[in-house]
Image (cartoon, rainbow, N blue to C red; front, side, top):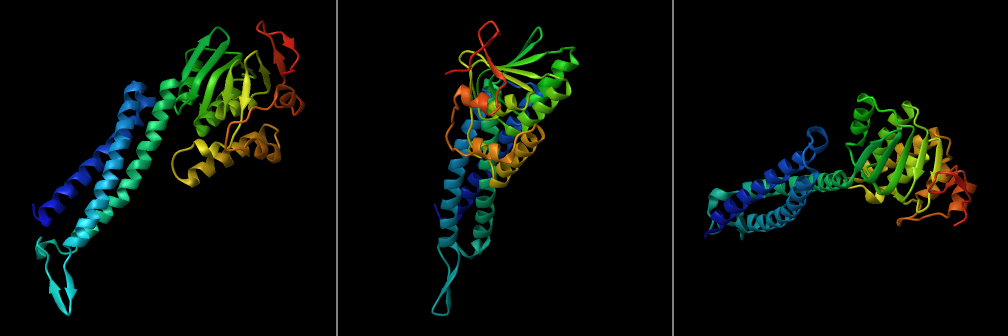
Length: 289
Protein backbone atom coordinates (compact mmCIF):
# COMPACT_ATOMS: atom_id res chain seq x y z
CA UNK A 1 0.00 0.00 0.00
CA UNK A 2 1.41 3.40 -0.93
CA UNK A 3 1.62 6.28 1.49
CA UNK A 4 -1.17 8.02 -0.39
CA UNK A 5 -3.48 5.02 -0.03
CA UNK A 6 -2.63 4.67 3.65
CA UNK A 7 -3.22 8.36 4.20
CA UNK A 8 -6.63 8.25 2.54
CA UNK A 9 -7.61 5.09 4.44
CA UNK A 10 -6.70 6.62 7.78
CA UNK A 11 -8.64 9.78 6.98
CA UNK A 12 -11.75 7.68 6.31
CA UNK A 13 -11.22 5.87 9.63
CA UNK A 14 -10.78 9.18 11.44
CA UNK A 15 -13.99 10.74 10.23
CA UNK A 16 -16.05 7.55 10.43
CA UNK A 17 -15.13 7.11 14.09
CA UNK A 18 -15.66 10.81 14.71
CA UNK A 19 -19.16 10.70 13.22
CA UNK A 20 -20.00 7.59 15.26
CA UNK A 21 -18.75 9.21 18.46
CA UNK A 22 -20.73 12.40 17.96
CA UNK A 23 -23.94 10.57 17.03
CA UNK A 24 -23.70 8.24 20.05
CA UNK A 25 -23.09 11.17 22.35
CA UNK A 26 -26.12 13.04 21.02
CA UNK A 27 -28.23 9.88 21.22
CA UNK A 28 -27.35 9.36 24.88
CA UNK A 29 -28.43 12.93 25.63
CA UNK A 30 -31.96 12.10 24.50
CA UNK A 31 -32.50 9.68 27.39
CA UNK A 32 -34.29 12.12 29.71
CA UNK A 33 -36.55 13.45 26.94
CA UNK A 34 -37.76 10.35 25.13
CA UNK A 35 -37.81 7.69 27.83
CA UNK A 36 -35.09 5.61 26.21
CA UNK A 37 -33.65 2.67 28.11
CA UNK A 38 -30.73 4.16 30.09
CA UNK A 39 -28.97 0.82 30.55
CA UNK A 40 -28.62 0.20 26.83
CA UNK A 41 -27.64 3.82 26.21
CA UNK A 42 -24.99 3.62 28.91
CA UNK A 43 -23.49 0.54 27.29
CA UNK A 44 -23.56 2.26 23.90
CA UNK A 45 -21.96 5.43 25.23
CA UNK A 46 -19.26 3.47 27.03
CA UNK A 47 -18.42 1.51 23.89
CA UNK A 48 -18.29 4.73 21.89
CA UNK A 49 -15.97 6.34 24.43
CA UNK A 50 -13.56 3.48 23.71
CA UNK A 51 -14.00 4.14 20.00
CA UNK A 52 -12.99 7.74 20.67
CA UNK A 53 -9.75 6.50 22.18
CA UNK A 54 -9.12 4.53 19.01
CA UNK A 55 -9.98 7.67 17.04
CA UNK A 56 -7.34 9.63 18.88
CA UNK A 57 -4.72 6.98 18.20
CA UNK A 58 -5.68 6.79 14.52
CA UNK A 59 -5.50 10.56 14.21
CA UNK A 60 -2.02 10.71 15.73
CA UNK A 61 -0.91 8.03 13.29
CA UNK A 62 -2.53 10.03 10.49
CA UNK A 63 -0.54 13.08 11.50
CA UNK A 64 2.70 11.10 11.34
CA UNK A 65 1.82 9.72 7.92
CA UNK A 66 0.91 13.19 6.71
CA UNK A 67 4.24 14.59 7.85
CA UNK A 68 6.13 11.79 6.09
CA UNK A 69 4.05 12.15 2.93
CA UNK A 70 4.36 15.93 2.67
CA UNK A 71 6.84 17.20 0.05
CA UNK A 72 9.96 18.73 1.58
CA UNK A 73 13.07 20.36 0.24
CA UNK A 74 16.70 19.31 0.51
CA UNK A 75 19.56 21.41 -0.82
CA UNK A 76 17.19 23.72 -2.65
CA UNK A 77 15.37 20.93 -4.48
CA UNK A 78 11.97 19.52 -3.64
CA UNK A 79 11.86 15.82 -2.82
CA UNK A 80 8.58 14.14 -3.64
CA UNK A 81 7.78 11.08 -1.50
CA UNK A 82 6.44 7.82 -2.86
CA UNK A 83 2.88 9.03 -2.27
CA UNK A 84 3.27 11.59 -4.98
CA UNK A 85 2.97 15.35 -5.28
CA UNK A 86 -0.83 15.08 -5.28
CA UNK A 87 -0.80 14.80 -1.47
CA UNK A 88 0.54 18.30 -1.02
CA UNK A 89 -0.21 19.84 2.38
CA UNK A 90 -3.84 18.79 2.75
CA UNK A 91 -3.20 15.63 4.81
CA UNK A 92 -1.74 17.73 7.61
CA UNK A 93 -4.66 20.17 7.53
CA UNK A 94 -7.29 17.42 7.56
CA UNK A 95 -5.46 15.40 10.17
CA UNK A 96 -5.20 18.47 12.39
CA UNK A 97 -8.92 19.08 11.98
CA UNK A 98 -9.76 15.49 12.91
CA UNK A 99 -7.34 15.69 15.83
CA UNK A 100 -9.12 18.78 17.24
CA UNK A 101 -12.59 17.33 16.77
CA UNK A 102 -11.57 14.07 18.42
CA UNK A 103 -11.17 15.86 21.76
CA UNK A 104 -14.64 17.38 21.41
CA UNK A 105 -16.09 13.96 20.59
CA UNK A 106 -14.43 12.33 23.60
CA UNK A 107 -15.70 15.07 25.93
CA UNK A 108 -19.20 14.70 24.49
CA UNK A 109 -19.24 10.96 25.04
CA UNK A 110 -17.65 11.14 28.48
CA UNK A 111 -20.43 13.47 29.62
CA UNK A 112 -23.10 11.39 27.91
CA UNK A 113 -21.77 8.16 29.40
CA UNK A 114 -21.67 9.67 32.88
CA UNK A 115 -25.25 10.95 32.64
CA UNK A 116 -26.48 7.66 31.19
CA UNK A 117 -24.98 5.86 34.18
CA UNK A 118 -26.68 8.30 36.56
CA UNK A 119 -30.02 7.82 34.81
CA UNK A 120 -29.60 4.06 35.01
CA UNK A 121 -29.20 4.13 38.81
CA UNK A 122 -31.61 6.98 39.63
CA UNK A 123 -34.82 5.79 41.31
CA UNK A 124 -37.66 8.23 42.02
CA UNK A 125 -40.96 7.00 43.48
CA UNK A 126 -43.98 8.58 45.16
CA UNK A 127 -45.58 6.63 48.02
CA UNK A 128 -48.48 8.55 49.54
CA UNK A 129 -47.06 11.79 50.91
CA UNK A 130 -43.43 10.62 50.66
CA UNK A 131 -41.18 11.09 47.66
CA UNK A 132 -38.21 8.71 47.63
CA UNK A 133 -35.00 9.27 45.69
CA UNK A 134 -32.34 6.55 45.58
CA UNK A 135 -29.25 5.72 43.53
CA UNK A 136 -28.17 8.95 41.87
CA UNK A 137 -29.23 12.35 40.53
CA UNK A 138 -29.41 12.50 36.74
CA UNK A 139 -30.29 15.36 34.41
CA UNK A 140 -33.86 14.08 34.10
CA UNK A 141 -34.67 14.61 37.80
CA UNK A 142 -36.20 18.12 37.46
CA UNK A 143 -38.50 17.01 34.64
CA UNK A 144 -39.55 13.88 36.53
CA UNK A 145 -40.42 16.01 39.57
CA UNK A 146 -42.55 18.27 37.39
CA UNK A 147 -44.36 15.19 36.13
CA UNK A 148 -45.07 14.08 39.71
CA UNK A 149 -46.73 17.39 40.53
CA UNK A 150 -48.49 17.61 37.16
CA UNK A 151 -50.06 14.20 37.87
CA UNK A 152 -51.54 15.54 41.12
CA UNK A 153 -48.88 14.35 43.55
CA UNK A 154 -48.38 16.42 46.73
CA UNK A 155 -45.49 14.90 48.68
CA UNK A 156 -44.77 16.38 52.11
CA UNK A 157 -41.31 14.93 52.59
CA UNK A 158 -38.34 13.67 50.59
CA UNK A 159 -36.63 10.44 51.65
CA UNK A 160 -33.05 10.06 50.46
CA UNK A 161 -31.76 6.50 50.55
CA UNK A 162 -28.35 5.30 49.42
CA UNK A 163 -27.46 7.93 46.83
CA UNK A 164 -23.99 8.72 45.48
CA UNK A 165 -24.97 12.13 44.10
CA UNK A 166 -24.72 13.16 40.47
CA UNK A 167 -25.47 16.22 38.36
CA UNK A 168 -25.14 19.42 40.41
CA UNK A 169 -27.15 21.68 38.10
CA UNK A 170 -30.02 19.15 38.00
CA UNK A 171 -29.94 18.94 41.80
CA UNK A 172 -30.16 22.73 42.15
CA UNK A 173 -33.10 22.90 39.76
CA UNK A 174 -34.81 20.02 41.58
CA UNK A 175 -34.36 21.84 44.90
CA UNK A 176 -36.08 24.91 43.49
CA UNK A 177 -39.02 22.80 42.31
CA UNK A 178 -39.40 21.17 45.73
CA UNK A 179 -39.15 24.54 47.47
CA UNK A 180 -41.74 26.05 45.13
CA UNK A 181 -44.16 23.26 46.08
CA UNK A 182 -43.41 23.75 49.79
CA UNK A 183 -41.83 20.36 50.37
CA UNK A 184 -39.85 21.27 53.47
CA UNK A 185 -38.56 18.04 54.98
CA UNK A 186 -35.75 15.67 54.01
CA UNK A 187 -35.15 12.33 55.72
CA UNK A 188 -31.80 10.67 55.04
CA UNK A 189 -31.93 6.91 55.48
CA UNK A 190 -28.67 5.87 53.78
CA UNK A 191 -25.31 7.27 52.64
CA UNK A 192 -26.25 10.50 50.83
CA UNK A 193 -23.18 11.86 49.04
CA UNK A 194 -22.17 14.95 47.13
CA UNK A 195 -25.14 16.47 45.24
CA UNK A 196 -27.53 14.34 47.32
CA UNK A 197 -26.19 15.84 50.57
CA UNK A 198 -26.57 19.37 49.27
CA UNK A 199 -30.11 18.63 48.09
CA UNK A 200 -30.95 17.71 51.69
CA UNK A 201 -29.32 20.89 53.00
CA UNK A 202 -31.41 23.03 50.66
CA UNK A 203 -34.65 21.90 52.34
CA UNK A 204 -35.77 23.63 55.57
CA UNK A 205 -35.92 20.55 57.85
CA UNK A 206 -33.35 17.76 57.63
CA UNK A 207 -33.35 14.54 59.68
CA UNK A 208 -30.94 11.63 59.82
CA UNK A 209 -32.56 8.21 60.28
CA UNK A 210 -30.61 5.07 61.36
CA UNK A 211 -28.06 4.36 58.63
CA UNK A 212 -28.28 7.88 57.25
CA UNK A 213 -25.15 9.95 56.61
CA UNK A 214 -24.23 13.08 54.66
CA UNK A 215 -21.06 12.93 52.57
CA UNK A 216 -19.31 16.03 51.25
CA UNK A 217 -16.45 16.66 48.85
CA UNK A 218 -15.39 19.06 46.11
CA UNK A 219 -18.19 18.63 43.54
CA UNK A 220 -15.86 19.66 40.73
CA UNK A 221 -14.08 16.30 41.03
CA UNK A 222 -17.18 14.45 39.85
CA UNK A 223 -17.97 16.67 36.85
CA UNK A 224 -16.90 15.60 33.37
CA UNK A 225 -16.21 18.28 30.79
CA UNK A 226 -14.13 21.46 30.85
CA UNK A 227 -12.93 23.25 33.95
CA UNK A 228 -15.23 26.22 33.33
CA UNK A 229 -18.33 24.00 33.54
CA UNK A 230 -17.08 22.53 36.83
CA UNK A 231 -16.34 25.95 38.27
CA UNK A 232 -19.73 27.29 37.13
CA UNK A 233 -21.43 24.42 38.99
CA UNK A 234 -19.50 25.26 42.14
CA UNK A 235 -20.48 28.94 41.88
CA UNK A 236 -24.14 28.01 41.33
CA UNK A 237 -24.01 25.76 44.38
CA UNK A 238 -22.52 28.59 46.44
CA UNK A 239 -25.30 30.96 45.34
CA UNK A 240 -28.07 28.50 46.22
CA UNK A 241 -26.54 27.64 49.59
CA UNK A 242 -26.10 31.35 50.37
CA UNK A 243 -29.77 31.95 49.56
CA UNK A 244 -30.69 29.12 51.95
CA UNK A 245 -28.83 30.85 54.79
CA UNK A 246 -25.43 29.11 54.74
CA UNK A 247 -22.22 31.10 54.82
CA UNK A 248 -19.64 30.89 52.02
CA UNK A 249 -17.05 29.85 54.61
CA UNK A 250 -19.12 26.84 55.66
CA UNK A 251 -19.76 25.80 52.06
CA UNK A 252 -16.06 26.09 51.24
CA UNK A 253 -15.30 23.87 54.22
CA UNK A 254 -17.78 21.25 53.01
CA UNK A 255 -16.20 21.37 49.55
CA UNK A 256 -12.60 21.29 50.75
CA UNK A 257 -11.84 17.58 50.39
CA UNK A 258 -11.21 15.59 47.22
CA UNK A 259 -12.54 12.49 48.98
CA UNK A 260 -16.00 11.99 50.46
CA UNK A 261 -16.06 13.02 54.14
CA UNK A 262 -18.85 12.08 56.57
CA UNK A 263 -19.09 14.52 59.49
CA UNK A 264 -20.32 13.05 62.78
CA UNK A 265 -24.04 13.40 63.48
CA UNK A 266 -23.46 15.52 66.57
CA UNK A 267 -21.21 17.81 64.54
CA UNK A 268 -23.84 18.15 61.80
CA UNK A 269 -26.44 19.11 64.39
CA UNK A 270 -24.12 21.51 66.22
CA UNK A 271 -23.44 23.35 62.97
CA UNK A 272 -27.15 23.38 62.06
CA UNK A 273 -26.58 21.25 58.97
CA UNK A 274 -29.30 18.90 60.19
CA UNK A 275 -32.40 19.63 62.26
CA UNK A 276 -32.06 16.43 64.25
CA UNK A 277 -32.08 12.64 64.24
CA UNK A 278 -35.00 10.20 64.19
CA UNK A 279 -35.51 6.51 64.80
CA UNK A 280 -37.11 3.99 62.44
CA UNK A 281 -40.55 5.11 63.57
CA UNK A 282 -39.78 8.73 62.73
CA UNK A 283 -39.57 9.83 66.37
CA UNK A 284 -36.89 12.21 67.60
CA UNK A 285 -33.79 10.64 69.09
CA UNK A 286 -30.28 11.62 70.11
CA UNK A 287 -27.75 12.39 67.38
CA UNK A 288 -24.87 10.66 69.18
CA UNK A 289 -22.89 8.47 66.75
